[in-house]
Length: 245
Image (cartoon, helix red, strand yellow):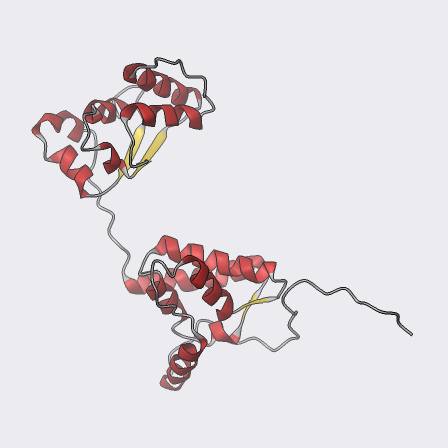
């Protein structure tokens, strides 16, 4: 939901997502709401997820009526609202919204524990590499802290971690190699994440010191090393020039 969202603009956006763009020049808010509901039913939509719902609040808008009717019995939708604590305060702490509060369950999204998240990250690194048909380079599979690097670099955001892993594997494929290595992660982090975290956790010098110490400490690596095989060179093959004998 955009920062300047209104009930009418949200309804019109819902119509557009179902393929309807021919709005009357003087469309009222009530008409937009009715049209959006009709279009969603035609499209067979049952679940409606509204992210950043707090952007609707703080304006002279009938937000409570809009949210209440979306989740009404008989013809309503399963509505999931995602937003800041302001959304919870609006629904549950305002006396005029008691009826609406009865229709929405309070389900706070708690972060995963670090150990659980790192386990998911390690599984994703191995799984995505396997699905892409590439191997993990030694700079990854002998580093017992590689999952922690991803976790710390993305500051615990599982979504950012998964995007980083997928993009790094895609880069390895685009470069034409048969392995994904720490350099793929370092470059993607430089391109996509330095604004979010200025410390790149994939610097090679740092990896060498930490991974080497960990191996002597007996910490299990991400994955056991495979037998060495010839590696493909990265980048597109160059055309041969000149005559051959």
